[in-house]
Length: 231
Image 1 (cartoon, rainbow, N blue to C red):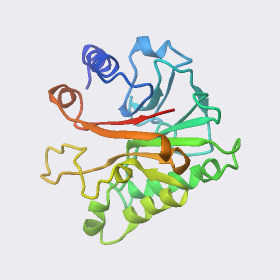
Image 2 (tube, rainbow, N blue to C red; image 1 turned 180 degrees about the vertical axis):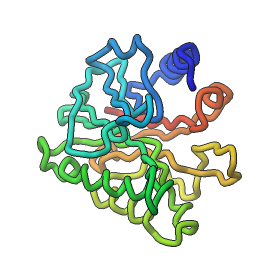
Image 3 (cartoon, one colour; image 1 turned 30 degrees about the horizontal axis):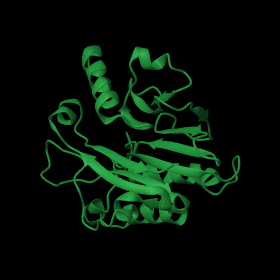
Image 4 (spheres, helix red, strand yellow; image 1 turned 120 degrees about the horizontal axis):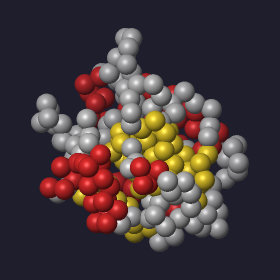
């Protein structure tokens, strides 16, 4: 369990050292102080199973929550911001694991369902066209396809590409995997945290960076992903 003091310490580090315009976070919760900033904090708890969820926070820009029809409240959180002339939509996504049944422990099954729920938004059928930034702890990686004996993870990423979303890791010219998850029981350098942007935003993309230091390791087993854009 994360204590209130550790939660505050973590947020103080993120806000004062990372200093991003938008924070997309998962498996976490805001502090009581951040909850009060209703125009800047969007957060949903994963229903009935835990006390944490996913969210989006901006210290500099107002956010408006957008709801879609989905069974994955707290795993999908959507916010809009008028940073650019065309609506900027931010999506914080968590690859929620199957709790029971024959696919217990799989996240990819739920991820495909989430993309189906987001199809109307991606294709402009919900409130028109928009620029999109999507990111999160997806619990997905093509590293897992060999283990699972199929291409379900590759197909998931292909679906994102088909929705005209571009992986900023690839946009930066990277081809190999980079570790974003430090797993206590695995020596595999898992990459399961990603950021995607609308292809129409690619010309505004400047930089992609992964932060891994003693502070990050104190607060999480995931590294921080930062993208810099000229918007």
